[in-house]
Length: 374
Image (tube, rainbow, N blue to C red):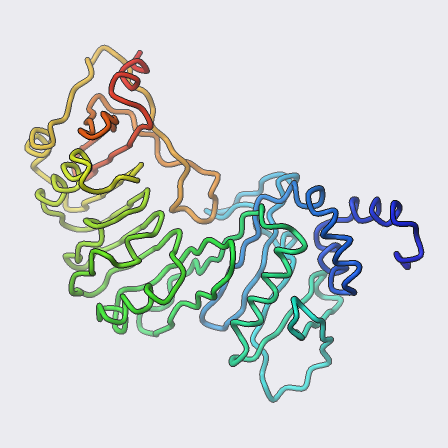
């Protein structure tokens, strides 16, 4: 079918009823077709929840998923709505000496190699190492043109690599993208200079998953690491450096063997005073060796009590740490204990049992919070 032979109204009707993958493939054919697709952008992209770049830093392959709200949610293990049917492109590293029968398209002003085969319904783009970032930038800019900047774009490096091997995460400078990074604090990154240099030269990460295997000198309080929206820190082998005290984001999940009582109290009291953690909404600290200072902590943070015969409200917020399903919420927090921030009278539920310590910050004053108690 030659689309250009039809009147504009018919062309637009055809475009409006095409699936996302066919639209993407068609957008490479000519500038006029791309413009026509862009003019239908609002209708064609309204069902898109997100576009996910899932990058494998070991082999340099990136699988691009388009998550369509109109499709039923499919869950397996911790991953959700990501199957081969959701792939719209694969971006692979090309051997510079290999002579492939590729087709070149002008993608946002850059000539980019693509291959098509009967084995895959989606296009496969390729790059050489020296041209890597510019290829990803041009492809991403093309997605912004075709699907719009109102779509949620996420870049993920979800698998922590083998700590015995060293791979610097690849974080390209892309517009309108949230970055989800997993990394080992070992070897190269256990040197605070390398750690700080990586984050200072990268876009601010939305979520950081950090497996701590070695001790490191303290980070600067101004480190961009602390600007992440959420952090998950696992430190079960050593007493970890303090990656929490200067955190400026929303959610903290921290698993460790030991944690000082003074650090727990410091987190809470700095929040209560308004000195720090102004954006905080959820904290989960799991201390595997347990604690014996529950009552000491509760007394020192000035915890208030809700009558045992009354039912406190359930605190949940959107889970920013679980990058496989960002429609999930945090574990429900129901507690008869709460604290209040001095600067704005904001309430937060607190819970402590054994080695588990939780904070759930409400968007309500103490009076508004208490009115929710049944």
